[in-house]
Amino acid sequence: STYAIDVAITNDNKILAIAEVDTDGIHIMSTVKVIDINNLDNQNVKKYEISEGGLISDIEYTSENDLLVMTDSTVEIIQNSQKIEKLSYDYNNLFLNLYKYLN
Image (cartoon, rainbow, N blue to C red; front, side):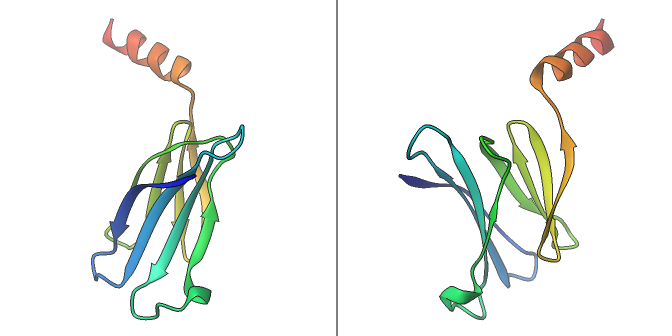
């Protein structure tokens, strides 16, 4: 089964992004569909697979219309139809670093 998790739209209201999660089978598969609202052909829907096993928690467009995708283990950016991994993290190291900083 596929479920919509989050949506985002560019500042100029021309491009819509839909974050989806597919829970069929053993592995979770997260995808982002990017749709040009001015051209609604099925061929115009771009689909990006996000890190295998990663669960999308949030998507947002920046002021430059780059799409930020936050998962449970990465922050990725979709820029000019290319997906680039910006930051990888795991919660153990993140919380350890926060603990050291706060104490």
